[in-house]
Image (cartoon, rainbow, N blue to C red; front, side, top):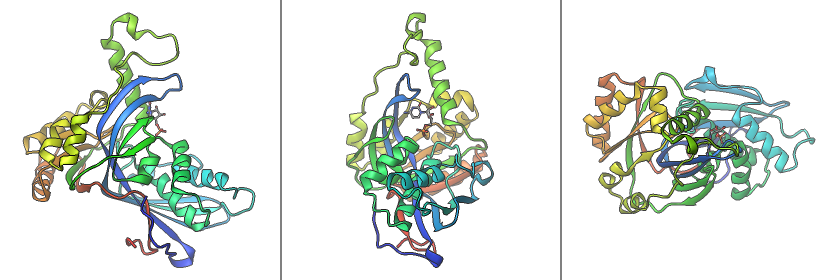
Length: 333
Ligand code: C5P
């Protein structure tokens, strides 16, 4: 997590900025009895940011503007609200009247898009409330609190490129050279992450022999034990996007494509127009395309826009820094 000189904006407001992520590898193991799948993933933060501003208030409320604003819960189920409440609990503020907070979320990361936008807002709320309340939680504590809110929250705090194990919350930073130029194609509808994992299980069960598909311990169908792709890690160290592109993998992609078959057209359009790698991001439906350089990313963005296979296209770079404080006017400090 990047720490900068704490700056308070007007009326004691504190703002944090937080990136979206794509998964360069997403290997999904078997569903455990707790409903979560064992993962090996390589997270990569990209330069598409949400901003969260917090101010002291009598009670906690959320104001949301931007991408998908009408579909996000604004009550206690909001991940930023849950994060603020969890931080208040963990740092002993509850009961002292200090945990009320007005949370303003400016969303550029689409909702239910496979880019961890909700987790990003939770991470930004943790960083901003920690500063607003001078709560003094360490980066490790914030990651632990974040992991209770969502599997991707610890990575949104850390940013960069990192290997995630377990549910995705156990992180190790990855060595990466250079920066990578991406085009993200947003789809018209969203996909709920649990639905995509469930579709993945169904597809696996339908392909497995009957004996392997039937389990008695409450877990999902058999799946190969996920392993980190060492070739991908070497390619990332080399800094060569042409080496990285063909190694992008996502075990959730067949499931996302089964739920939104139109995504096949977007992936095909990206490949046809020179993407080095074309993949569904996380649980989808956003498609991520890796380009050789910034100029080719621009050409690719234009071509995909022209192909009419998605709702909107953005050009981003990675790795981006994790959640960090910015000044009250919303500019990076
Ligand atoms: O952790 P988070 O709340 O973001 O997860 C959302 C949903 O995604 C979970 O309820 C679960 O259905 C699915 N999931 C999973 N295995 C993981 C992470 C998430 O099955 N490792």
